[in-house]
Every structure is written in C-alpha cells, then in structure tokens.
Length: 221
Image (cartoon, rainbow, N blue to C red):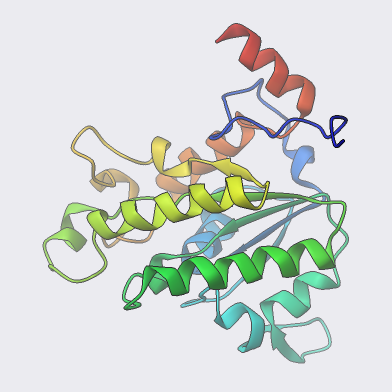
C-alpha cells in the first residue's frame, strides 16, 4: 500500500506566504523567449536560466542552443542536467501552438518531464501555464491566439496531475478582465516587458512550493 505517499499539491498551487529571492538560489528555469524575458527584466538576481528563443518541448532535447561557460553549444536539457537544483520551473508551449496534433504536444511534454525527473530526481517540477497574448497579437488572427493557448494550458494541467508535478497558473496573474495580456505589460502582444515580468516574478514569490506554506494556505481557504 502506498498510503505513506505525500498527497499531491492542490492544482493549481495556492497563494502562500511571500518568499525571499534566496528561495530561487537553487531553482532552474527552463523555457523559451518569455522565460528569457523573466531573466532579463524581472530584476531577479538568482536562479539558473536555461532558455532559448523559439524553444519547444522537442527542441530542448536536441537543438544546440545553450552556450556553456566553455563556449560549447549544447541542448538546453543537457545544460540543465549539469546543474544541481531543488526546483525546476518549466514554461513551454507558445512556439508549439501551430502543431497539428495537441496529442503530440502532450506526449512530448510528458517525455520532457520524465527526462527532467531522471536528471534531477530530488527536485520539485513546476509546470507553469502559458500566459495569454495581447490585443496586438490576437488581431493578427494566427494560430498564436488565446483560444489555442487555453487548450494547451488544459493539457499542461492534465500533465501535472498525470505526472505528479506542481501546476502553477502563471496565466492567472497576467490576464486582464478582457482575457488578454494587458497592453502595459507587454512589448509586442507576446513578450512581457519589465512591468509584466515583475508581475510574474511576484506571482512566483507568492506561490511557493514549501509544504508547510501550502498547508497553511489551504487551511485558510
């Protein structure tokens, strides 16, 4: 009987007591250009970022897009594998919105989770929802739209449950009343500006993975 197994965290993670930025000292952030924005513009001075523009749940395995300290280019997952960490925050999906089958996204993301768990067996894996796009992007009428993002976020949430990961609904803090990414928080309808990145970081600070903090938050709710 696996009764001793710790209960899975609530999905999505609840708001908890705010943590200091040292909390991210041994955190890994894996993602595309949006996570790169978090690194460049949020003001967070800690954590380890493995990002590349255009990254997907597929390219992180094979595309040599990360330059190591020795100047060698390696795939993002290989670079991240070398880093000791206790938390891995993943946000990937905006570049996969044009994929013809959502099942491909689901299955490939599942492989990614397995690989991260293999590389970092002790780390907590956090799947972040994809923030919406703004009016400027919606107006383009391409596959990069909020209806499609909502479908992919449903898949991410399913995966969190299937794979026993944490689900952090970052989109919740970056969605305006009209369902769009607010104009004052983005550059081009897709990429978050410093203001938007600070909102995202504050959400990470107030949604920690500390078990006691989660328990306390649930008691309150």
